[in-house]
Length: 267
Image 1 (cartoon, rainbow, N blue to C red):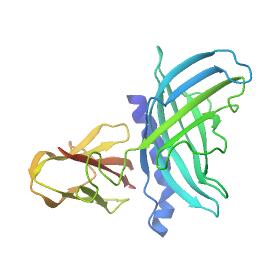
Image 2: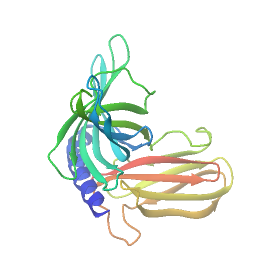
Image 3: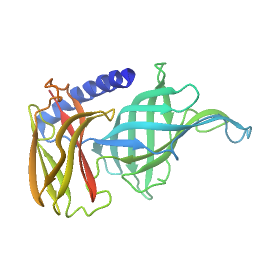
């Protein structure tokens, strides 16, 4: 857990510094927190075609990363992949960290490419690439494979199946009735969190850091009437200590659904 917190802090501080100039000039694209699904998330090492010898290692892959829209050209939309923190589940778990890029678009047919510079247990970065290929999932989901050598003979491959945690709609409900908004975002001192409930009920409104640890409870099993409500988060832990700049997740949970929003503290 200490490794996860340390990496998340370093990665996010560097990322916040990178987007600060863009924020000063205008609204920066909102980053989206993704989580790997297993399956299809997996790590494989061994022989691929044309060698055809058995794959010697196949292990589940879990973890999270952040996707932030970067820019567009006439053909592709480009994204930054930030804060990669994955774990290969084995008898001796391996931690994978890094960053990279993702692009999606095409002149004739829809294509995608995921390129990642990844470090295994703190080792030197290695370039994993999917190559340009047709997408296997409808965006915003990502379902692709990245490898060191194009899955040719002896190679290492990561099956990346990921879904966004920060969804505009509702899990198990209607996005027109249950909603959540955060402003300003990014923020410096405090942020206002507004949410609408379709009916009376108990509500959980919490703030999490990128590792999934709850750091703030804005509504704990609180009974609220239908309609619009607001809460303010002052960017502090429940202990009163200010949180560092970085990416956080606000989660609204009710008996009929839930919504998540990402929130960025810049200083």
